[in-house]
Amino acid sequence: MNFHQKPVTYVGEVGLKVMDLEGMVQFYTETIGFELLSKSDAKAALGVQGKTLLNLETFEGVEPKTGRYAGLYHFAILLPSRKELGKILIHLHNNGIRLGSSDHLVSEALYLSDPEGNGIEIYRDREPEQWDWDGKEVKMAVDPLDAQGVVQAAADSGEAWMGMPADTVMGHIHLHISNMAETQKFYVDGLGFEVLTSMGAQAMFLGDQKYHHHIGVNVWNGVGIPALPEKTAGLHYYTLVMADEAKQAEVAERLHQLGAKVEDRGDYMETQDPAGNWIRLVV
Image 1 (tube, rainbow, N blue to C red):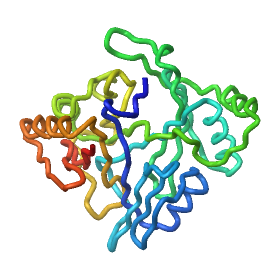
Image 2 (tube, rainbow, N blue to C red):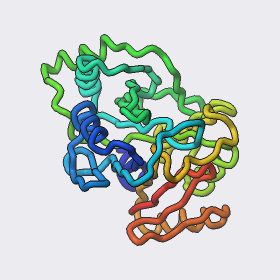
Image 3 (cartoon, rainbow, N blue to C red):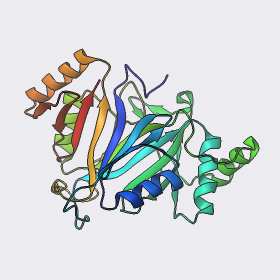
Image 4 (cartoon, rainbow, N blue to C red):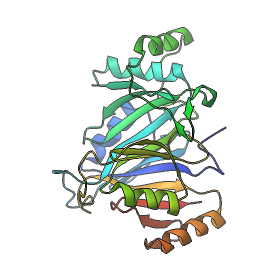
């Protein structure tokens, strides 16, 4: 099962508002290993094999984030294999990048931040047959990563790191939100995701077609926090790729019924979750 292609609804691209476009492009190409696909004075598109995964945009008056807002906790880049995770682990370590790591049972993950403080996860999934289910919920944990095993997988391949490999995708996005109940209603009743793991009143992981999560949400920044201001650096938007125009229209109609605004922008439809995070529904 490929959880990141149609008819599954999945995260396609993430857009960030940035202060230093040149510095961020350098980080995402040299440190993360994305290709620079296009660039102007104010915008840059980065990705893998011609496919955009990250859009950076800067503008007059953009300010650094101070204080607690809704927005990005991290976006997560999904690699196709354990050896690829090992290769980038060695590369990041050799470049002195500060890393966190975790074994989530369903996946193995590295954590870091970009120069402007945006959270990044880089991970690989275990095979779905290896995931452990408890009724309708998939079991996830925050266990120590077997870093030695991950590095060994890279060493056994005999391959050097050459940037992001083919088949790399945007695996999921994890958001700071302000209200759990409202968010659940929006993502489940509106967008059509299913709660796959719940951490009580603190966090929730939602996926389509039984993927462990395409969307993570948490209230760790506080309940009732405001939306990220328009001129503050951080998450600009993320896209959800829909199976077809009929699905897009159906989702838009459900969101309308929940009282959410949905605007037709031509290339995509745009809405905001209850915390003020912008979402573009694309086909």
